[in-house]
Structure formats: structure tokens, C-alpha cells
Image (cartoon, helix red, strand yellow):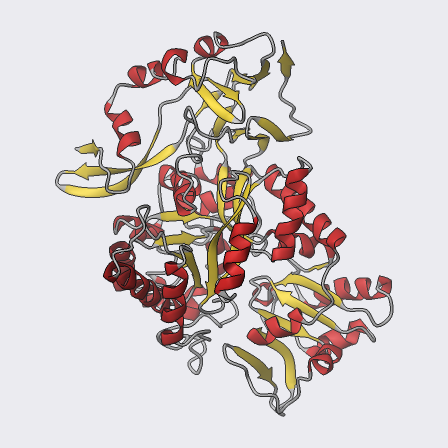
Length: 598
């Protein structure tokens, strides 16, 4: 028999105690007497909904065995909002009693309502630029890639750069990487470079290589690699830091281009039901987001990451630039890159790739230097997160976090809220590393939708033994590790429903392939990782992730109850309305929900 246990092991004691009470008692707490933030009438009430206030972590005992589960809060029907925050949640009758003369009433039509998704890992600017330039996502062959590039070359002024992103050679019949010669055939006199979907390698044409001064004798820089053909000539494939260095020398986009790209990405997020995003873009893009906020046009809560490699002086300057308490836009974590990606075979591995025995990937730091930088930045009060996909990269990240924690303990300067160090992706791990996550309190920030792309070839890359501990969401939770979910948009689409489906099925979208199903989650656990887990990962658990009085009024209206439909139907979920701070920022055009005002 399973028994629910309220515990503060994960800091959720206050919330978990609710589940020791009967549902009727909890709903009684939603009445106006105990839940109103103040005595003023709500700005808006949302009624006639099937409201799920949230999914929260819990420890469930099966006999004497503790299981790390998640539970759904009791349902409600209506929500009252004032000044962007929830005033009350309860039955229609309870909430309608709060209505004042100026309160707007929105009828939810009986549809399913849940907290807004918090995407814990996005690249908004990259997503926008992908839409503005040559969009190569989903191309099924080299020929199709060439056709799209050729079409752009016809309309690009002579001599100007052609850029784009999104190609994935593992989707092509021969799975062969493109070359500079393939690009030369369709780019004319334009220098051109196109980045793979994962952002870790690019292919450049001959004109771009000449611009960068890359020849057969150019040495590989630290953390990067130039591919060469059998004659020793560059193929055009540039890996990691080589690619980064070339892209950094391209003419920067104009402020107008940055704005347009971000507007497109924000529209994607709103349409997909994402109300918060933890974003890795450039500082110039953050300044555009500030402009949008001032104009009242920012439709997404953005927690902006800063580059781990930047100087402490610059990081502190950027941190102080914008009010940290702004719940719509602020800076947060420092992000560093330990390695590359599995698809590009640049993820740093403890042992060589099973399908490339001479290659163990590319590590981008020396451990001693990494530890020193992590200590300095943790001392300065920064949260730190490391991109680490391969198990060697994960080991590097954990060692650096351990060094920073030891330093803080030696100085008796451990932050009261914890370090909340994060490993972004954590795709390939060992059981020992997962145990260390738990011991160090490191958050596993993962993107389950990656598995839908990677399962076609991941076992071939890794071998069966390593693959069994890859994308190990259940193993992390069983070890008591905090888990948060995101999409890595635009590496994958920003819709969270692909990620939910992947997390609960570990099957391909056509249902024909399954990948180590023992690592799949329940729908409750998956929703928690996308909401409360993601909120905790950005120190926002008191504001986001649940629909409770005092919380930000960020929620979704969906065309189906994703907790009760057959699992494959999750993929077809349609967002009918996205609400941010009580304001509708997206409403489905062909499935409009009626509203009326008093």
C-alpha cells in the first residue's frame, strides 16, 4: 500500500501538507475569507473551467520503500486575479462572489486549465534568427538543403553573407555531413555558413573559409576542431569553438532584425503555452527585450542567462543593469559549455563513441581552470549552470560544483537558498554521477524532446550499457535529484507537449520505437518538472508553477485534459488560451473562448 508522506526534504512541506487534508477542506481554503490577497475586487475572474492547480513533488512509501513521485492538486473551477496575481481559486460560486463592478469575467467553457509551462532552457534569439534567415530545420536531404540555400542566394545582394540554421544530416538517406563543395555549388560569390540543428557544428563554403583564414595548415584551437578530407583540405565542417570564432566575426544583426526575430520567438512561445523561459541569448538581445517590456509588448517572463566566461566585472555590471526583482524580465544564471553534442559527436565522453572508436568528443575546459572560475563566480553570488551532455563533461561539471561548495563551506558562506547549481542536458550519465547529483544538490535540467530525435541513433553512438543510463529522468528522480524540463528551442520546437509525450512514453512519435522504457515518468512527474521543478531551478518557486493565491496568474487553457487522455493524444494538444499575469497573450483564432465584462 502506498502512503503519501509530507516532507521538507525538497522544501515542499508547506504545500505537501495540503494533501494530508480532504479535498473539500483544501477547497474550503480557496474561499474569499482566507485566500484574498486584499479586500479589493479582482480585475478578472475566470470561471467554468476544469482547473488543475498544479503537480507537486511528493515522497510516496510503498511499504518501507520511499518513491519520489508527484501528485496532482485537487481540481477547482475558477480563478480570481488582481494586479497580475491570483487572489483566489475555488468553485464558480465562491469566485463569482468576489466579482466587483469593474471585474471582467472570462468564461473558460469547461476546458482544462493548468499552470503555464516554464521552459527551463531556450535560445530565443537563435530561434528568431532561424526564421529570418535560411531555415533548414527538417530538410530531408542534402538536395533539399541546397535548394533552400540557392533560393536565398538569388535574393541576397552580391557579396553579402548567407547564413542559416537547423540542418540535421542524421535525417538524410546517407547521413553524410555536407561539405564546402556542396555549398559552393549553390552560393555563388556569397560567403556562407550554416549551423547544424544542435548549434555545435557548422558547414562553411570556400569563401567563408577564406574569410576566416582557415587552410589545411590551420591548427585546431582549444575546444574546437576543423574537419579535413583525405587530401588534408578543410571539408567546411567546423566544430565548437572554431565555428563560434567564425560566427563572431560576421556582421552583427541590426536592432530591428533582433527585434523582429525575438517577436517571432515570443509568438511561438505564447502559442505553445509557455509563460516563462530561461533564456540564453546575447546581451544585445536582452536590451531588445527591455524595450519590449517598456512598451508592454513582452508576452513571456524571461530569466536571462549570462556567459560564464565573461569577466566578473562585466557580469556584475550586467547583473546590476536590470532590477533583479522584476518578475517579467531579469538576469539569472551563468552558463558555461563543457562540451558539444551527441549528434555532432562532440559531446565529451569518458570512453570513445561506439560508432567512432577514435573519438571521445571535445572537452572545452581544463579542470583546474574550470574549478577556479566556478569558485570565483559562486563567491560573487552567481548561480552557475553548465552545458554537459557526455559523461566526461558531466564529471567535469560536478567536480567544479563540488570545488565551489567546499570553498563556500570552508568560508562558512553557504547561501541560505542553496547554490542550485545546474547541469544542462545531462544526457549521458553513470549511476555514480547521478548519486553525486543528489549529494551535491545539483539540478538536472533536461529536455525530454531530444530523445524523440536522438533515439534513432543514440544506442549506436553509445552502446547498450551507456545508453541504458542516458536521458535517465526516472533514475534522477529515484535518486532524489531535482529535475526541471525545457525544450532547447530552436534545437527542438518549443511546444512542451512533445516533451511531455517523450517523458511518459519514451517512444517515437509514430509509436514504433521505444528507448529504455524503465526511465519513463508519470504524467504527474513530467508536469511537475515543467512547472514547479523549472520554477525552483530559477529561484522562483514562490511565484510560479502552481495556481495558488499569491502566485503569478500564469496559466493555460487546453483543448484536452493531458492528465487523462491516452498518452499519444498529448502530441495533438491545442492551446486555446495563454494567460500571463491575468492578461491573455494568446487565444486560438479558430477555437475562440467567449468572454464578457461587467
